[in-house]
Every structure is written in structure tokens, then in C-alpha cells.
View 1 (cartoon, one colour):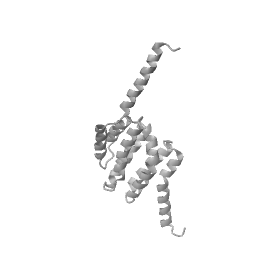
View 2 (cartoon, one colour):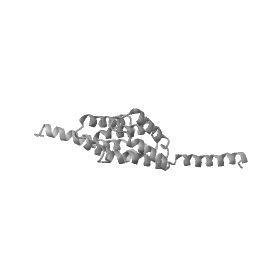
View 3 (tube, helix red, strand yellow):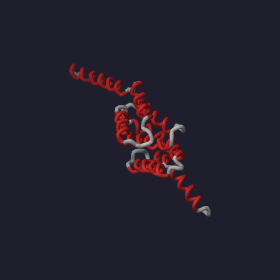
View 4 (tube, one colour):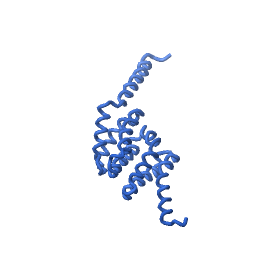
Length: 175
């Protein structure tokens, strides 16, 4: 038979856990603030802005819903054809910073979708060789750091392989 103090402690723990879950929920004001800051990243990867956004994301790294909502804001901007190619790199660096620093639910959320946006960004950067190399370098750090599942990393990097094969074929048409 448990003592009354132990029961109270267990109940208090459950109440504390529910309270923590409520804190993990993201509200409209936080979403709008994050979206405004993402929209203001511009075309230069400003470390201070990226760190600030990463810290905001960190507050929701244990909330799948929060991670999905914040990631969707970045992804939608990344996939937007109306933004200039030079604006892609700061968004890519922001995702990189979040998965390396905030971690948590962001890992699985980004992992599931990264092959799509990496390929999209790679194709959008077709005339921006220095930016393409920076995208590939981010992917390489994920690969070297074992941040994502090996199979997913392979899918993420397929666009680099296809591009390299096309370059080889164009430079050596006899093969």
C-alpha cells in the first residue's frame, strides 16, 4: 500500500507533465513571429538571425506539432518559386542549425521531407555553382555527423549524384 505522500507526488508529477505539454504548444503569435523572422532572413546567411531562429525553434523541439509548424514555415519559403535563388542558402543554413542544435522532433520532421527540398534547391541553384557547393557541404556534414538515417541521407544526396553523372556525360560524350 502506497503512502499518501507518494500518491500526492505521483499526482503532482502527472500535473507537472501536463503543464509542460501545454508549454510545448505553439500559439499563433509565436508562429507569426517566427514566420516574420524567416521572411526577413534575406539573401545573406546572418549568423545572429539564424541563431535567434534556432533558439526559438529549440523551445518546441519536444513538440512534434510545434516542430512541424515551424519547419513548414521554412520549407514553404524554401520551395517558393518567387524568392530569389540567393535567399535559399540562409534557409538551408537555418534548417541545418535547427537539426544540429534544437534536434528533438525536428530530426524526424526534416528527415522525412529533406529529399524533396534538397533536390528542389539543387535544381534552383543550377547556375549558382558556389551556392550548390554550400548545399552539398551541408548535406555532407549531416552525413559525416550521422544526423539522419543512412538510407534517408542517400535519398537526400541523390540529386548530387545525378548532377555529377550529367556533368561527366556532357564532358565525355563517348561514355
